[in-house]
Amino acid sequence: MSKLALKNIRKNYGPVAVVDDLSLDLHQGELVTLLGPSGCGKTTTLRMIAGFIELTAGTIEVDGQPISSAQRTVAPEHRGMSMIFQSYAIWPNMTVAENVGFGLNVRRTPAKEAQQRVHEMLELVHLAPLAQRYPAELSGGQQQRVALARAMVVRPEVLLLDEPLSNLDANLREEMAQEIRRLHDEFKFTTVYVTHDQSEAMTISDRIAVLNLGRLEQVDTPWKLYNQPRTPFVAGFIGQTNLVGGSVRAGRITLNGLNGELAAQPGMPQELASARLSIRPQSLYLGPAVAGAVAMGWVSVVSRTYLGEHWNYLVRPRSGGELLKVHAPPSCLLEVGQECALAIDPGGVAVLG
Image (cartoon, rainbow, N blue to C red; front, side, top):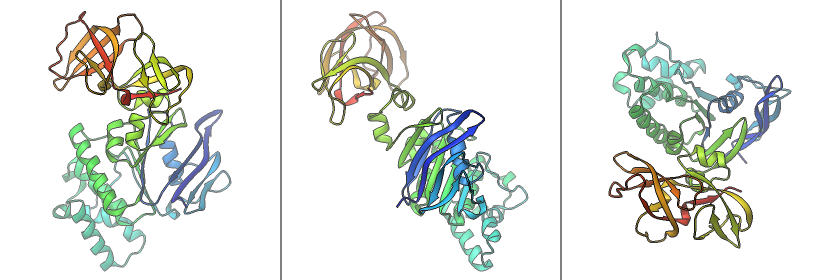
């Protein structure tokens, strides 16, 4: 049985379906991220799980028991959930220890037990030396740790996080994403995490649910989403890619404007007269052949950008066709207008249909 189950949930505002027929199951102890661009319905979904927004249709269940439907919504405070907001929402007039213990006091946890649990939680989030400080005396990352500790100390059935790292700078965001993953592995709370940041989602998630215009495009592990996207939207949203036309016949892939054939990987369609394909830029090679890659003809360099760790090349097949993005090592030095051989690693190609 799933710990948390969303069954065909929908939320309409007038005639517009902000969330449209969304179904998703979370296992006990799983961290699933809702990922998508602004306006895709991810925060609305999270707030429906929390009980802040009523459903237009469908049901939400915890341990098989319905907590939300179009007819009935269990109040947020009776769901056994904790939520961390984008703004942290910690009390400025309370110390760190008082903020973390707030939920325990509301639940009338015995004072001695509450004090012990607060101390243990502060140790885990590395805030014990700051227990008597006030929020204004903390950095952004420290305030985020207070919000995490307060949400987890009550031992929720489900932990909800709404873009909790969006107010932090890039380096601190990466550090806190790793911290959230560490704490999740420590406590194994069933967790729903909302973000629009692909790298953040890839860092922390067991699975990622990609939303687009209120609908679920694909839910999978980070590796499968990146390497085996099912739709053009997922392929383009998760990292950089080339979306090109081609066909698949008897398990062999041909690409418009290029010579050579690639083997379709296991699980891919084996017959498609007209297909869209995703090819990651690092799976294309310029110059001498690379072991495992298939020669696909000649291309000319249209533009180039040096990024230190690699070159970003934009190339065009000699026979015409779509431009291709290629990530090449710093040693691969080509001039604009220069022609060179192109090869493709079949493992970096996904058939989207």
